[in-house]
Amino acid sequence: MKPLVSILIPAYNAEAWISDTLRSAIAQTWEPKEIIVVDDGSTDQTLAVARTFESDQVRVYTHKNQGAAATRNKAYSLSKGDYVQFLDADDLMGPDKISKQIEALGDTPNKRILLSSSWGYFMYRYYKTKFTPNALWCDLSPVEWLVRKMQLNLFMQTACWLVSRELAEAAGPWDTKLLGDDDGEYFCRVLLASEGVRFVPEAKVYYRESGATSLSYIGNSDKKVVAQLRSMDLHIRYIRSLEDSPRVRQACVTLLQNWLCIFYPNRPDLVKQMEEMAESLGGKLRPPAVSWKYRWIEVLFGRQHANRAQVFLSRIKWSLERSWDKVMFQMEGRTVEDGLLKG
Image (cartoon, rainbow, N blue to C red):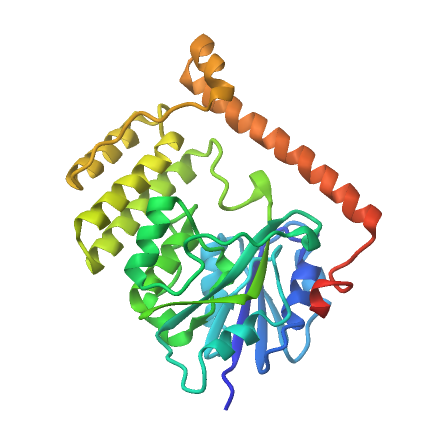
């Protein structure tokens, strides 16, 4: 029998996007499938909108606000699929995303193979999405995948993965203590349980840029800064459990160096912790450089003001770009049904 795929959608205040996301899930050409939405105590009309899609194939639940990780765990507990597809409530999938990935496994699928796909950013105009390959867009062993992620500061978007239930059970639940990078930490555990990643370029995911409202956005959030360091510490422990070679330790130091800028200089306690981690790995961290655009602010007012200016101005720039893209999307008059869902 063909495997059942569970598409799991955690939703919080996604009233503006949940309809298109659900249409994207319903339009998946793979059968059989089940679609499970869990509303995380939204304060807008997300739950009401989602319930208009209820059917034999689409089930909608709600619970008190607990965060994305707990909501994904709830959705998983309600699912029965042989494979699991996590899909955030504002993202989209190409109609044959899941079909292409299942087909890539062949006639005798190995449940320990982790499937990934192409992905690209968009704001409103999904048809402007650019799919730009990087070093993770190929078949890789778990260690090689993690080394490249750390060395090159790359990631794979959550919806790209298609996970067998066997792998999901081996990895365990999402970590509800992580307020940031919970997806990176979770899929790191899935990787550890796998025999490797099979990349399927024809399968496509459309990742909506949400700016400061994104769960992955750190900004000036102290809680997310702490969560980021915890996630990095876990990444380092995980990869070293697979291989503790000089190249792995160097990749771990590079990971710490790449992210040092979000801790420096506001959290000297965490910077010291990162420096000690790097030294234990045989490396040393350098003070992060300020972008030339904000160097004059650092000279006149100090590093903390330069960091705040960078966060603030980046948010302004993103907001303007998003407003422009929304206007163009409305003027062009295209919908998801017009293009994406028809392939």
